[in-house]
Length: 54
Image 1 (spheres, rainbow, N blue to C red):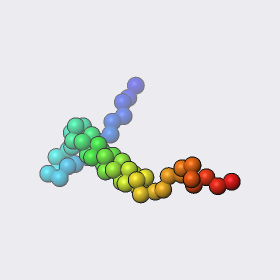
Image 2 (image 1 turned 120 degrees about the vertical axis):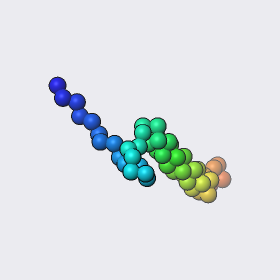
Image 3 (image 1 turned 90 degrees about the horizontal axis):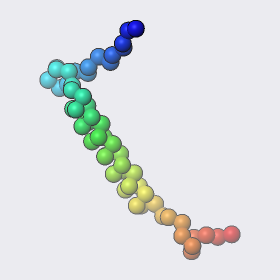
Image 4 (image 1 turned 30 degrees about the vertical axis):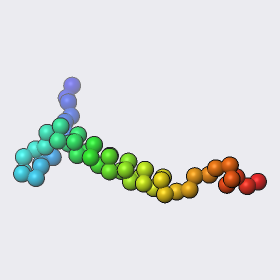
């Protein structure tokens, strides 16, 4: 059996990024996305009992 591996992506200094560095970048991007989503949800009106019209 052969194992496939993903080649490491070069970092800013031309060296391959480590797994920890990649995870930190992904977590930072995820946090930014979640913050933006929270901001959007905070600005959107939420339907309440007064907003329900039949």
